[in-house]
Length: 292
Image (cartoon, rainbow, N blue to C red):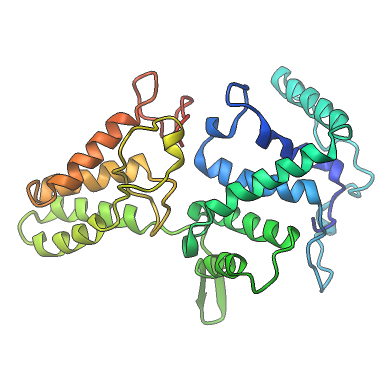
């Protein structure tokens, strides 16, 4: 997008994968939530290939030992699996030119509808920086004007990740208030079971109000009849509650006051139990991860 390497140096990412049926070996519902939220707007960017704004003409060409246009080995072959993916990439590039424009437009519309539905207000798409930036840039490429409410909100979501301190600034990849608060509660309960009751209760009351009971999460693709009850990692991320955070919050509530937080604990436990993988484990980071 910034013209630093030719497009042949980028893996083939056809937006038409948005139209693949659920039974196909590759489908959005079969990859983790952070991957799909990054991927969908990226598909739009890879399809439209609109040059990024770079008014100062900044480049990183000094990093290349071979001029980008002269490089012929962007994807060296290193293993049988690697060669398989390279072969699939070659097939994708060969087929791409024959895809009907009507089908392409349909795939673009579906990708746009998918990520716009999940923009998540000031929390941002997936509440993670790469997805948020891709979504904002995709909206620019799709012709959303600068004052469009969704584009304005998406930009503000990114701005809220920026931390400015005197003469330097940095951008956080995400924020983790639910996770941090839950772990702090568990630490206080361990260190000072009696003296920490008041601050722990205030923290848990704050967490209780953020439980996702009825959010239309993507996890319902695999568990359509399972009632909500999870917590996200961030301030807000309605489509994607998290197993780890939900377990930590419910554990802290159980230790603090099981009667006071009985409903929240029960909803969390039922949601966690319903989110188990087919092999009986919880699909947080294992290979059977169809719900996130």
